[in-house]
Length: 305
Image (cartoon, rainbow, N blue to C red; front, side):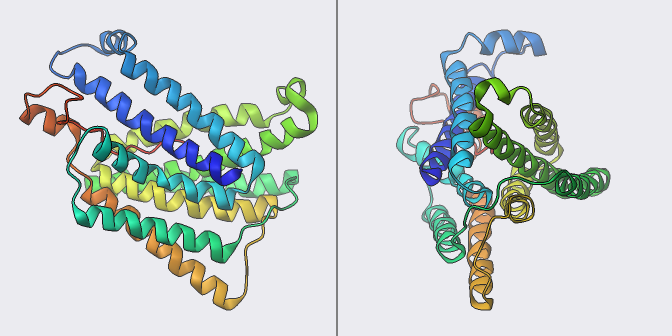
């Protein structure tokens, strides 16, 4: 069940990326101020449908974490890249290069290999306050360091550092969601809002979104996207083991194979980020065809855990 819901969450986020990008491009030729842009978008069916899909992403991901482990769910969410590529090819009729499909195949092979070799198992699911304090403080210090370091360097370096910071926050957010599902299972809906995890989800979600938008604005999408989708699964696996006692196979051979599979998956992420078709804004300016007629596509934009 966790794998099914994680795949649904990844597909829902891919739909969000494509639909909202289509809605934005539909009005790209008209200059509007910030609030006028928002008023324009909320009247666009594609944008509203994208927002509904975003809500679906959160629900499906929460259900996946309810039924399964962070070490299983978070890596699977990387398949958003593949779903987005498929939507661009099948729905928007974008030409996809053979090497791009090869990168997608590498990502899938690495992901499946990791899940088979690691065979993540559920842990105790009840972190102690001390464990929470250690996990949050250590990750918080790294996030602060990454944000400070992102003030210098090339646009690609700044985007990658901010993307890594956002990934750490999203990994923490996923841990909060996991904790909230545990509360829900034991105390029901009435008790959910009497405990802190549900409020921590909101705070970390806002912070993660802010860092993600800063990463997108700082430099190339390929840099921020690659950092985000590499750091998030790694951080989530570590948090799952550290906080929730999740178990991975730990024999020397299993550890080596897991590292190789993750390496293949992350190589696929980097190559997909670099080899994805051009962004819609650039193509919309070159092509007079209307949006949705086969000439525009949404760029790959990852979302929250």
